[in-house]
Length: 365
Image 1 (cartoon, rainbow, N blue to C red):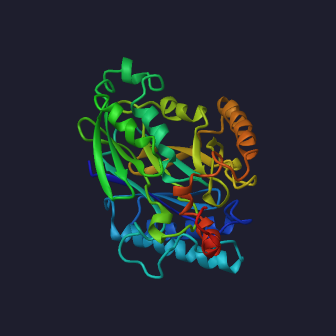
Image 2: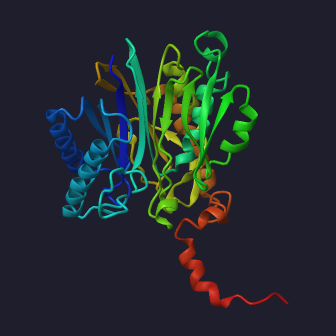
Image 3: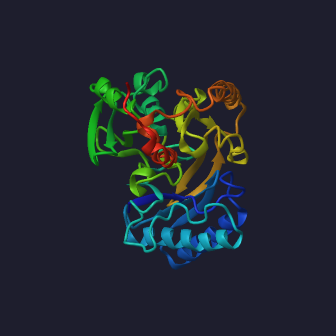
């Protein structure tokens, strides 16, 4: 069977109102653009969605990863939606498009990208995670728990198809290097790095036979632009069942709202809240950061779904815990540990304040 590629490409190209949500007109314009590509035969199928003020293009095709035609399609779609955003005077129109001209690949140009290519199984369930008001390292702990932690994923212990473990690819986003860890044998080495989520980011997960299991976007907007232009708002694709964790094991990590960087001006730590699409917008202090999980069955390349997987009372307690933790952190105001440490604040708007004070420092007596 011919290989299938899933490409999830996202961008913030205008917020409604402020940075809080996506306007329906942007979603409609993106659907029109991708429908044209499907009619031409470029795409097998597509689904347009959102998380907060981020527009997410979910596309299936036969052209492989990093394909120039697919990336051009995404770029042109974002530009068309930016024009709509400008006509509506939406906030930050075109914010994530860091260049005026497409150069063959959207990587490094602002949009976030997660893509994987595989031969479709007789039953191919996948989960697309989309986040808002947080950074690429937000997936580190959930992916670790899904694919490495037996307290989360029972299949690692009791299922022969998962018992060998997985290989975890990690990017050092500040030195542009990659490393692969053989887990569980190298689990402590893995944890030594991925706990530092601002620098080391889980990029992909593979079975021991080399089959792709998960992939995430690792673009850090501040490192690309050299200044704060908004949070990364990452996406992630995870395959499920048989030789991969079950749907319940993939969702289980989000029952514990782990703390991620994000919130107001991308300058604070806050808990990641698992929400259904209807709650995928932030109002309070640009937070708590949100994550949405859309489940699809793939049938001959077509996306059957989505199922809104966090639209489940089983995650109500996680949401309650998230709000309680947000209350506690907010009481810290501008103090750490709510505010990011100084080495990360250099990628926010704080340097503009420090520059103003530069000439006022004197030597201590």
